[in-house]
Image (cartoon, rainbow, N blue to C red; front, side):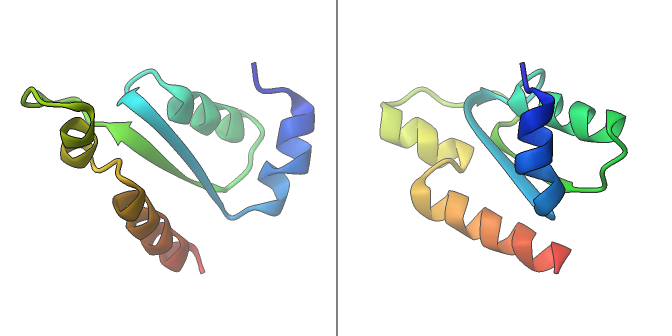
Length: 87
């Protein structure tokens, strides 16, 4: 559960909120955060990083992260791109 103290401390001060999860973004933390921000009437941009609703090919952990765009380099690129859009 994301309490009001989290909203007050982090979300009110930030234009871009980033969530990252190693599973489907459908029904995940990013959706919960987006719903909370909407219910509070906040206009933050939420960048949801995770596995899109698609079929991935089998492989080891590193390969699965690469396919999902969840390597550290890809996450950094996505955050910088998202940050550039909210400036």
